[in-house]
Structures are given as C-alpha cells and as structure tokens.
Image (tube, rainbow, N blue to C red; front, side, top):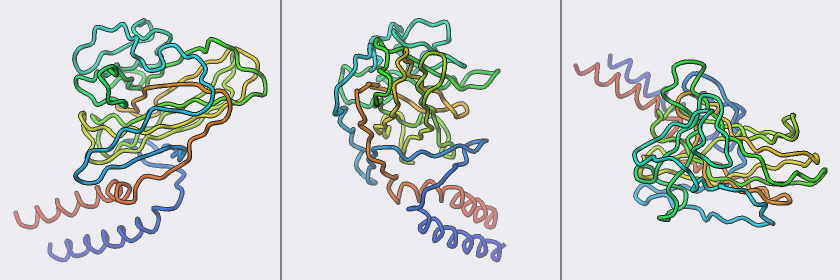
Length: 278
C-alpha cells in the first residue's frame, strides 16, 4: 500500500507541473459532469484571495444603451420568498421574457448573493430546472427587443453571469447566447462563468460578459440557453448597446484554475491514504 501511495503522489506531482504549464494556454473543451463542452474566453473576471470575499464588478457599460424592459429581472411577478421558484414555458412571472426548455428558476437574494450588492437587487435567473425528470434539465429564457436591428449595424449584449453554487465542483457550466432575427439564428456563442472553489450561496463569483452580433433589419430576439446538466449558469442585469463594446478577455487566476484541476487528484490521494491506515 505504501508503494501505491508513493506512486499516486508521483502522478500528482507530474500533473501539478503539467497544469501549471498549461494554465496560460487556450483550451477547446472542458469535461463537465457527463459531457464535453466548449470553453469561451470572452469574460471580464475578478477573483478573491483566500480571506477576502470576491468584489462585485461595477454594472456599467459604455456605448448607447438600447431599451430592454426588465433586463435586471426586478419586475418579476413571482411570490418567491424562499430559495427558488420554478418558471415553466407557460409561466408569466418574468415580464418581457419567455422561459423555454425544461424551465428556469428564479433565485432570491434572501438566500443567494446577487451580482449587484444593493437592496433593490432581489432576483436573478438560474438557466436550469434541477428537478426535471424527463427531456433533460436545461432551460432557456428569451426576450424580443422593442426595435428591429438595423441591417449591417453592430450591437453588443452585456450581462452578469455566475456558476450555480448548488452544483458539484466538477461541473463547470456552459450557456449559449444567441441572436435570432426573423426566424433564423443569426449569431451565437458558447460562454462559461468563472468561479472560485470557495463559492457558496452567500458568496458567489459574478463576472460580466459580452456578446456581439450584426443586425439584419429584422425583429431581434436575445436568448440565453443552458448547456449543462441539472445545475447551470446564473444570469442577471442584461443590457443591449449600439455598436461593438466587447469586454476584454481575461482568464481565471492561476490559483483558481489550478485548484479546480487538482481537486480530483487530491481526493484520490486522500482516499488512498485513508484506506492504507484502516
């Protein structure tokens, strides 16, 4: 058994070196709970140290803002006062937004930390329905803009995003942001939130991301869809702007990325050591 422990420690040492060398390289895919998903680096991120909570990024954007009713989800009609409220495709609890797929959850600031640290920020959306038993748990939410996109003109969507803290640490959620003009999906992108392993319901790492699309002169729908099982991404404070205002890409901190990759190895070594002394 001693030989096994030494061998596992050697493997972990090699893995640590490899992780540290790979941290600055772009990855194409990431393994979630049961599937491979694409990573997108178009994020504006912040990280917290071991003792201080992660700061909340300012919810400001440059450019001419286009009116989007209920982009912050604070006009919700739900009577939710506990942890979550499920909204199905037939629900009308989120004005100017249409839920789809398996449905979405409304999270409440009484239990979950919102992107904006303000008493007026009470709700955000979880893009999954963890309790769905058939046809998957992925949900979506979409809104139609009041003004048609001008053909050939560039537009930008800004939004706050986070990882649902109730999910397992080995699940790195992904969402698809798309622009539907007329009856066709015009532009889309796969996005992923950054998170810290110490995140909890009361300390959630929120980041601001952007999505750029080009107008086609038709009615415009902005849609957010979960691409993760059971626990997906949280979104809040959606706004649309005229012009290209893409946020600078920034990778997660090295310590955060390293800790996420080493978690399975640490667990394996701990279990092996435990069995060796029992």
